[in-house]
Each structure stands twice: as C-alpha cells, then as structure tokens.
Image (tube, rainbow, N blue to C red):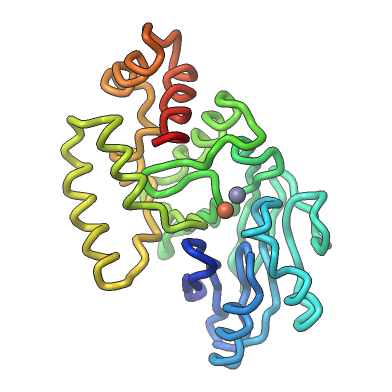
Length: 259
Ligand code: ZN
Ligand code: FE
C-alpha cells in the first residue's frame, strides 16, 4: 500500500513532503526545514512522527531536525555530515517507510552531499521520487557546490526513471521556472499549455507539484540541452557556439542565476 503523501508549506516556498501510514497512525517527513508546520500537522491529525528523510544539508531542509528529534525520537535518514542523522545513506542504500521501499541515489550538483529517494513502483503503484533541490518543475537547483557535469549527470539519473514517476521537489518555483523556460526555449508550444495549467493551480492556492518525469522531459530546459533551440540560446549567452551539451547546460544555468 502506498502511503498518502501530503505537502506541508514552509517558509516562503518550501514544501515538507509528509508520508502518512495507511493505518493513519504514523507519519514520515522529507526535509523538515522548520519544525513548527510539522508539529502542527501531526498534532491536528493525531500522528506520530516515525521517520525523517533528508536530501541535503541546507538549513531550509534540516532546520527543524533538532526540535523534531527531541519531541518524537524518529529514525533520521540522510547524507553524512549533518547533525541528528543516525542512518547515513549512500548510493544504492535502501530505506523502508511504512512498507514502501526507497532506494538512494546520489545526485551531487546543488550541494555535494545531495541524495534523492526513489520508490520504483510496481504493477499497481506509481514510482515516487523525492529530489530535494536537484530537479524542480521546469527547473533545477542552483550549483552551489557542484559543477555543471556533476549536475547534468545527476539530472540524467533522474530522467532515466520511468516517465510516470511522481516528482516531489522541495520548492514551489514552477511559475518562475516556466517564465525562464519560455525565454530559453520560446518555440516550445508545450510550455504555453503548461503555464496555463500551473497558473490555474496557483490561482486556487494549490501546489503545482508533484510533477512527473515525462512532463519535465517535455518542458524543463535543463533536461533539453541536447536540442538545437537550447544550443542556440546558449550561443547567444556565450557569443560563440557551445562545445557540447555540458557547456549548453552551464550557460543556461548561469543565465537563470541572473534571470
Ligand atoms: Zn538547497
Ligand atoms: Fe532548498
């Protein structure tokens, strides 16, 4: 049985993804940057916090750890080097939350310690991805610690997942990302229809997430750097043709930093 997954808004635009066990007793959270919305949600729904999953060390993903650990004593999974994590994970490790198995993949780029959690799904359940700040709807994380080839390699690991994989990103950046995507790839007609759909969700206060891999491959410029229109955009930024897809990606990412 797949647990229910619920986004808890935090700060300005973070989501703390919450998994709820099918018996409605326990919860797990991904990247609790703030303890307060988590405690409120747990209290309101009479849930016990059993598990925490962490994708990377940034405070907006880990800031609630101390308080939540003290209050609930959950199991805490994540990359090494973060205070409070008692199950350190690496590529290929497995975590089970409410009988749902997740495998760990390393996705350096935004930070060097960044990991993602993948539930591969089966004949009757959809694959699930928690990707923190690596892949966003129509965007990708800023390169704070890693290099363009590292990030492109990480994004390729994610796009190799089945097209239906539900992509749970840690921020609501979708509309701003789509505005940039349109500048980077003005002739992509799928962007226009996606903007309408996502704007509609925001207008009624709903998250645009989860996305899925198929939609991202069709509308996310950072996953489309092998295409001529993105290469042409990169050339305009560089003032010369890019040598390869990595240089296209690097130029587009740098442009987005100042967009
Ligand atoms: Zn981050
Ligand atoms: Fe973040």
